[in-house]
Image (cartoon, rainbow, N blue to C red; front, side):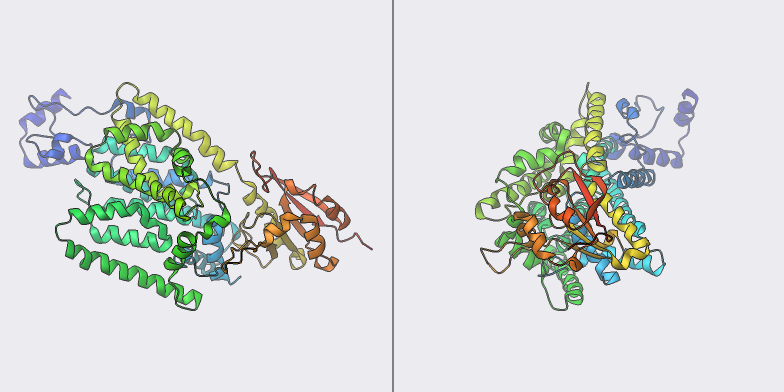
Length: 557
């Protein structure tokens, strides 16, 4: 090192200085970034080499190479592993607002009322069509390729978040933000799923990278507005976190007319126009899906049909749960972070407040954890900032964060609610024999409890209990699922009054077995499989899923 230092001290060639400056910026040398004379050199008199955070060496995820290529490779590898370690069901929308629609679009095997745009399912329809043209439309590929595509996109988003913080702060802070992002149990649980909320979150990260926050050199009004517009097309509520950010940008922009005329209006017209054309093709009529979504979920609050929660739910349960053990670091980071990051904090508070306050006006009273998933990347910026500025307990805090998130991530991803997917592998077996034409599968479960043809991929006759919300204003309306669960035995006897109408297979949660046991015995059904679902059964959802098959040799009088 002394010899190398002496050599550099004697050599004054321009190329060497430029090379060293580039290297210093890469590793976050504050002097080099500020353009100070002599910054980035080593071995010069009176100059000190920047100290690297020693705690990073213990955590490969936080101390990954600063270059984009190795970081992206690491991100893709981790998110691909993430994909295969999430084998549970989260919510029905994961399939019924994406894969099932895409499967129907390509293979012609319901998308009523125009509440959702075909734009998002069209992505997966493209994947399915490519597999079909390659004669590779095997059911396992139909299941995993969309999720792997989502995993790769999530990896790019992780790297974009890292790059954003690296441009705003330095490489060390960026690595801690990246570490927090990878450790987040809820991100691990959600980022490879085909939910519209997942795509909304990923597009939020991409848009954030191009947002013209003070100190950013990557700001681009057209790019970030286009990404927001795309997110709104996929899920209109994506606009909520961006309202304070766009408003702040507008106030700080000196050329406001140019921003509106050359960015906002063209981007809006192109995205809405494209969405209208796509939906016109598949709905067969002109439909402004975003307006219908607003009427249904906000103005008329039909979302309460699927359950409601108290107004404070997002503050007392929603945000604390998705943050998990990141919560104290988030609070600490909010206190330490520079003033320019207050707009990120404002976006988090604004989003949670909007979802909460609208409860009082009978709007958005249906609440779910995934609805506030898009604010999680904002929170990770503060968590990473907190870890970067910890002194004595940095290594212990990082270990705690990693281990405390690993347990819920693996449990939620591999164990909790896995029966909804596992049971489909049993159904797939019916497609591989001559019995397929005679098979008739009836899911006697809360509607949309399982995927459907996207996880079977054969023309098998299947049916599930329907639960469409009433859009006519009929106060006495009761959906089929509620009618069934009010008197399961009576409903079955009335629905299948003739043995020729009986399904060949019945699938239901374990909590229903005792109540319909007489029907099963009388009609000759035998249990053929028991599938674990959850350790936390609730209401109509049992701990196991049972598969019953009708014994065709039994005759009834």
